[in-house]
Image 1 (cartoon, rainbow, N blue to C red):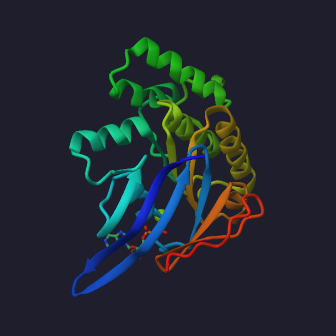
Image 2 (cartoon, rainbow, N blue to C red):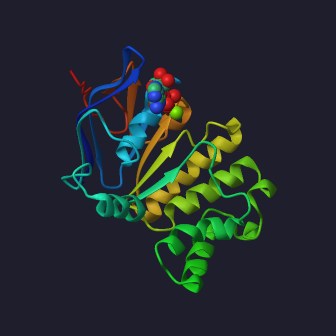
Length: 238
Ligand code: ADP
Ligand code: MG
């Protein structure tokens, strides 16, 4: 395995009037090719902030994020957009599907934005929707789908461009336990099929336990938990 994404001494502060909120404190983190990582943390612990920085959607106050050894915050605007569009897929808690478009159109959208022709985009989107078990729901709009189905569409949309990394923000946060489990299963299968790396931020310990490595974010400090699967020692960021 080789390092795909790395954070070095990442800090993030927000200015709130006179005072500063320190959301991330000298975070160090590493993601290998094909690895599925969970970042556990309570609400307000900084999970979304960290995920947004990993995806170059927000800037850190200090520190670096390296993708294949290159600092993503030294990329120019065009390189940063290419990094987001070609290397990353995003899955959000509230799916963020476009309500007026069908499942197929939602999944094809990143390819069309990437200037793929409509026929090829439709073929590829159909294949990936089939892969997530939704070939019978292609023309359904998000409002006509169940919560679990919407999240499957969101995963299909994240994966359709064949990204190196999927960043998922509480993907089971709005689902009941049983539906959540079908999403855990899907994440495992997708890794086997595509060797995609996943960073899943969650407060769902059951989901976290299904992934290779579990990190815990507490008061802005990130620590790797000892895992029976990877047998890695605890690494702290101090
Ligand atoms: P989580 O995703 O773990 O629930 P967030 O990353 O959304 O946590 O937020 C972490 C902390 O940072 C919270 O206390 C939140 O209020 C604060 N925060 C997030 N975004 C901003 C912002 N744009 N301005 C000020 N404070 C923010
Ligand atoms: Mg959040």
